[in-house]
Image 1 (cartoon, helix red, strand yellow):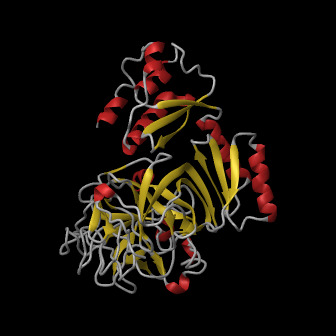
Image 2 (cartoon, rainbow, N blue to C red):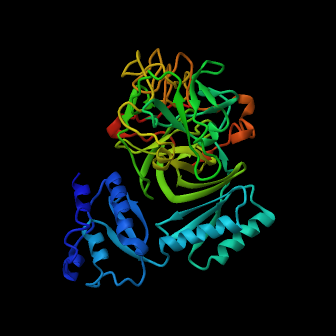
Image 3 (cartoon, one colour):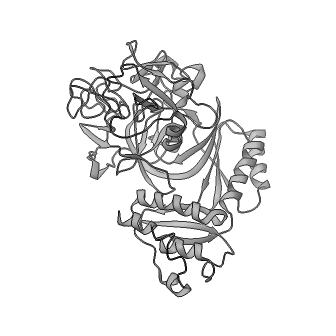
Length: 468
C-alpha cells in the first residue's frame, strides 16, 4: 500500500519547486499499484497524457506526455505532481487523443478481416498487425492507410497465423456444439451467482453444461451478450441460485489464486491466463484499446498481449499474480508452440456492461471437493486443461477441477471427466464451432508468449505448469 500512498501526492502540495521536482526519482511500484496510479495520472494530465506503461525490470511506471510541455517549468504543476507521485515522465510526439484518432481512421479506411491494431505506449505508435490471409489489394489498403496517418504515427507487421476466436470441439463446458472456457465467477445485478465468458461463446449457444450432452447448469444473459462490436463478453447465470461461489481461479494440481478485485491493464503488466485447452500460460500486455477484425466482424476495446492461447481457451481468465481479474480470452493468432498475438476483453468494462460484481460469493461453486469446490461448472479430463472456478468431485481442488492432472480456471465445477468453459465439438473445430461465433482449425489458435513453465510463485503455481 506504500505505493498507492504515493498517489496521494498527486493533488496536494502542487506548488513544488522546479528544483524539488528535478530531484524526485521514480518510485518502485508493484504492477497493480502502477496500473492504479496510471489511471489517476491520465485523469490528472488530461490532454497532456500520451499513454503509460510499466517497466517490469525497473518496477517503475512511465508516463508519456506530449513534447513541448516544458516538463521542468515552474508553472507546469501537473507534470511536477506526476513526478512526485512516483512516475517517470517521458516526452513523446503523439498524444493519446491523436493515437485514438489514428485508430479511428484505420477502422474507417482499413477494416479488413485478418487485421488488428492497438496503441503501444512504449513506442508511442499504433501497432498494426495483418495475419497471413491479408494479401493483394487488402494488404495494399492497410499499408496505404498506415502511410496516410503520417510518419511516426503507426507501424505495420505481418503475423504468420490467422486471427480467429478460440472456439473448438473437445472437452470443457458445452453448449450444443460449442466449447469455451469460463472466465471469472461473479454475482449478477440481482446478487445471484453467475460467471463471465467470451461473448462469441455466449452468442453461439444459450445454455451451457459441465459435460457434453449433459444437463445445462447455466443460461446466457442474451440481453447483454456482446460479439462482435464493442467488446467480446457474456454473462452466464447459474440455473441453481443456491450455487456457492468462491472468487478464485483454479491453476491445476490443487492450486488456486484468490481473485480479489478487477484491475485495469497496463502495457508491460505481467499477466497469467487459464484456459480449457492449454491450461496456464503467462506473458505481458503489449497494447491497449485494440481493434480486431475477425471473420465474424470487428471487435473493439480489447487488450493485446503476447500470452499464448489455442482453440477452446475462449472466455478463459486473464489475471495478475496478486489476484486482480484483468481479462477474458477473445482470440488471436498462433498457438502455444509458435507464438502469436492474443486479445482479451477487459473485465472492468464487461462487469460494468452486465451489472455484475467480483468478490466473495462471486465465483463458481462447491460443496464437496477439496478447498471448497463443488458442482457448478468446470473441470477437466485426464491430462486436459479445464476452465472453471469451482470444482469437481474426485480430486477437485478449491475452484475448478477434474481428475488426474486436469487443470481448470474460470467458473464452475464438474464431475469425473467433465470439463468446463468452452465451445464446440471436435467436428466443429475446423473453421468455426457454431456459425454465430466462429472458431478456427483445431490445431490453430491465437496467442504468443511463453509456454507453461513459468508459475505464479506467490499463488502456488507449480513450475511445470498445466498439462495439455
